[in-house]
Length: 424
Image (cartoon, rainbow, N blue to C red; front, side, top):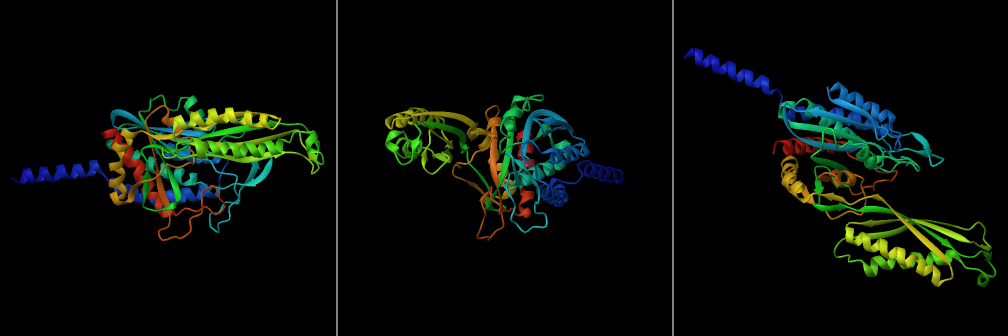
């Protein structure tokens, strides 16, 4: 009898050693590191396609975990590949790593004082959209997963993506270039997950939407040609500035009178207009640059078609000529409905069902959409605002701020969705 008891004790002891620390212990052990990484990256931001030091930090960390790495992907991207102890599917986890040409106003110990050149101008550089938190969260998830290979049935691919905010003019970059270079192959990815911190959502909350979650972004350029003349004699020329005003007014009716807004939201915005050199000269030409945001492909096609019809027609009505060029910057961030339904229970388990809520579609855009064009993807939002806070500064502003205490939930969410997906 004593021998059986002894064997039982030895077996249980062996089992405890084999299992080692559980996930929760690993989460607790990595939280302080995630915050430290985030603050260091925040203090040392780098612009799109120039994320050299950030990439070095990521690569060194993954290498220290024994994760196979690829560097220089899409210029400065880093990819890590972690194989579990059992064969299975391949899941990708993505974080964007670039900062913005914004001068920080926050009074923080880790405030960014970095400056750089952007479009020929000296600018401040700041992680004003939270990509520093995304990077640190994925570094944390990589550490936890690397210590739990026995729980991984398949392979996890960590994608640290540069230039989500868009590459500099004349350069390729971002998710589109990563896809072009084969980041979803070798091994072939079956599904991809990503998250975005949100300064207006309280920490502890996760938001998501099945289907179209974020808008497609298109950039348009309208060129108007009139006839130059003296400002005192407008009847002897054709005013391209007046025509531009009529065009701006006209294309807004595509949204207000032709788009089925009960279906999805849509936006046309002119962000820049350039014309003229002197107060008393009606110039020969004008140029407008703007964006189209859509959440439905049929609406996107309608708006593009009508702009191409309307712009030259308005110009002709006032004696001028006009052309419009429309190019896509990102596609619709489309959460695969089946994958979303499959993974929401995981988020509810991690955050609490009362803290996982459905959000309305967002007219902001994300180049995560290029990954989702190739494989099923699920993209969700993580709260970064201190509970009870009455003022949340928007993303892309000098006062943008995130509460570090919300980062651990991001680590848990990314870790658990990957494990549950692979093991289901």
